[in-house]
Image 1 (cartoon, one colour):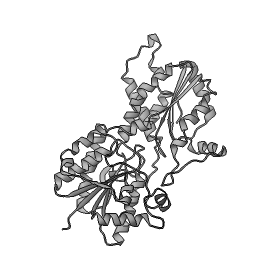
Image 2: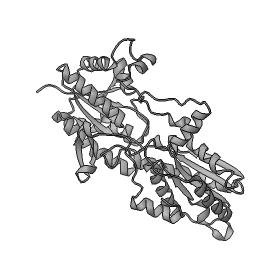
Image 3: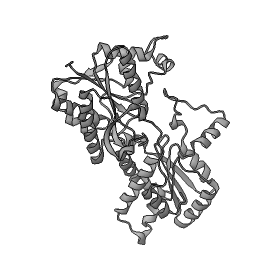
Length: 400
């Protein structure tokens, strides 16, 4: 039996699971085969292209549990597509005229990697599948097992991605301070912008987490501190079709009644209309290596503030973004449990030579399984008919 050598990498955006997933994989391999050699590529596929890696030493193995207590990634992240040669050349990761896929494959051969664990979103794992196929054509066997990471919870057919539950909890924690800004001025418009490229799941889940937190807070309505002043008045997701005039009329009535309006908005809500507005003014919107619009330049929260501020008669408007706060946290108990389950199956699959992405398969009764790369798709939309979300909207007087 050929000797195994394992490589780990984390890629894409941050999520509250990367460090813990790395630590869990190291722990599982150490338990099953303490002799197996493990390295970590630095900054995702950038490290594979440039040959930058670091060993998992005996000292690291002995203390891998520490990684479960941290956010971020000890390996570092990047957004690099091996299929985008022009971007790789521009950023200095490969010479002009060279194929990044070939360079990465040759590096894996030189490093004698037989099992690669990728911890990332659909882009990360799609690239991993392409890399495995490329190596197979060159008779170098590589088993690739991905762990699904994204705060957006938007990878099909996986029911729950790593880091999403923690991000929702941390977004609510962030807002527990920001919400007090509603008292800074009369007729205050307070907007909480939340991450989510194509899916509104995180915005909806953060709103739910905030209202659960709010339910446990003591208030003093007798001295102008009713629960209503701290509650959400609207939630806007990219999956929603919006009538801005009707919403403005509803929110104007809200501000008349409670002297403030609180909105939770996904960063890609009304994205098409926002992009059209920006482009009509001649503004250029950047894209990442995978061709995705850079949403930090879209500023959905500011756009909604401009749409509603005057219409509802707000005297002051404040937009706050919880994205970096939420995604950089250490994982909560729910995510740690999920990470542990997935790491167990990932190591078993790697040692057995089976490639795919680990996740609870929505198309197979929610069973934890190794899912074929061909079935992995990004951009899964949040189902607006989800009962708890419909209940949330009804309770704040918003139509879904």
